[in-house]
Length: 185
Image 1 (tube, one colour):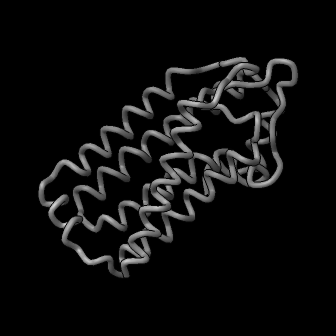
Image 2 (cartoon, rainbow, N blue to C red; image 1 turned 90 degrees about the vertical axis):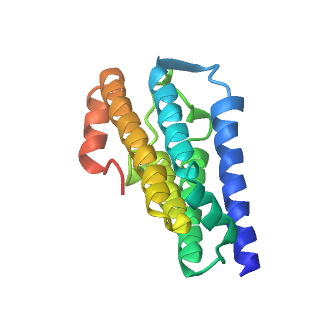
């Protein structure tokens, strides 16, 4: 089971690196930013959820001493699915992916291929699934609740803000897209 623990941490570090790249290193130079504040709200909610999750001494003691068992394997699998979904969403958008809500000024193009042909917010869906995987792996009720609840609220909030802004910006094109796709899975 030690290999499974390393896989878990490998997925977590890949996820952190991916999100660090997206939030801190990626540039928005060619985008018209239509909303930026919600990014900071979701970062705040995520950090609050993570801090509340790891704060209880009972969680830290349990996590350090627990054998990596079936629930951690299930959590790792769910986490991996979520991280993979987020990665695919970011790769599908390519240069159009931005941590802020924005559109390419000249094109006002809506990407509807790949995973975006079925789900409007696969990146947020991937994050929610990944945090669900953490909650399952934690197997500690208060910590699992905080890590999942705060992040889910954060990404639902962000999706609602993004939907409103994209509808204002793209109008009928986005309305039609909403009719044929789901917000999340």
